[in-house]
Length: 219
Ligand code: GAR
Image (cartoon, rainbow, N blue to C red; front, side, top):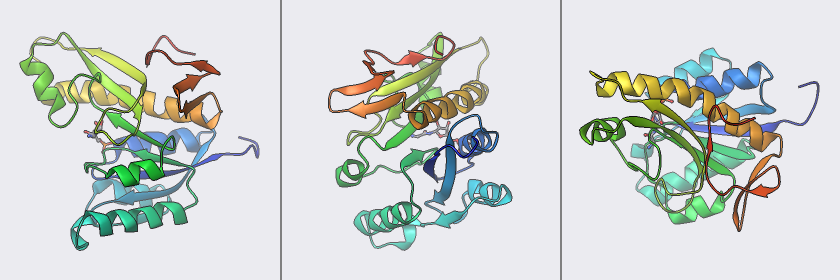
């Protein structure tokens, strides 16, 4: 990015970390004006931690089960994030519910990716539930995090078809391919100053974002 200022990211994971890798690669390629300040996992055995180390990234484990309760865990997580100098917190497969106090501290500075077309299917087992409901379309959503689970303003979505014979695994793989495209894209918009959250909701290119943007129909 030729010395241009870059947005420092703290990527917070619980598992495999494929979205973390996609974001780190987009940063490394200079595709987005961001850099990974630190990758943080809430468990020592998160597969993504080893991947992040292989990529040469700074990593920390803040193992939730080693703290007395949620307040202590969140205090440690917040200290680790803030010590990294991160300007944006990127939840990427982070599987814990955060308190309103925690989300308020990062208001407008924390994104999440969720494997459904929100507001459909917040919570867990989204692929199974989409299949059980015989949806013809499913997808993924990038949203700003607020105090209510999976309910913050959605900024970008990708849709995928549900195909005959799909299983939760095949559908999940199709959704994840799209996640790896839309998450770096949304972060890149924030880094470029094109996307931000205001008291009146998200704004894109200085205009109110009335509804989520759709991958394939955006610049
Ligand atoms: C992703 O599909 C993400 O959407 C989902 O977990 C997966 C993590 O994959 N997140 C949630 O379900 C959050 N409630 P990854 O570890 O390979 O990035």
